[in-house]
Length: 204
Image (cartoon, rainbow, N blue to C red; front, side, top):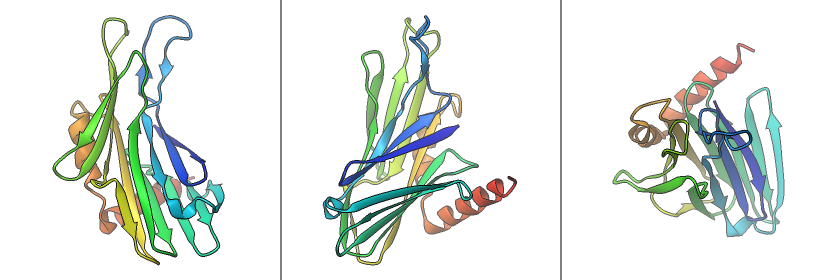
């Protein structure tokens, strides 16, 4: 029930995160519906003048994107895990690159958005709709292990970013679950998640 929409604005790739069970439950026609939890921005000064290309690959259920400059190519492979509440972004750079990573929650007059960084280096954000004006409360927490606002990548290196998203309907302890699952971002964790993802998609 997670979906992503990708866009780019020169030096930034933005992922809008969607969640089918996160609702703004205001009564009345046109006032309620599925709401935007927020998203993830990945920015780099080194790609500001680059040529951007993205391609959705239905066979592997992923998006391949690249920023190509005269002396560098930053490649991103993004996929929503078929078996867990997780989004994986694999990043490779040909040249030493600095990435700024920003996890953000959408804001509106009738919602509450908050977040922070816990002691394990997990950055998290929560958006909620609750109160007498709503038919029922709805809350979501997204998390990613990225304590520092910037990541220094060496030439020829790869990194993996793992974003989690849980609502109250997924887990009564959604914030704790989102933050705990965001810690499972080692190479072995990603490979196991990829294997389960591929096995699920091979059914079709």
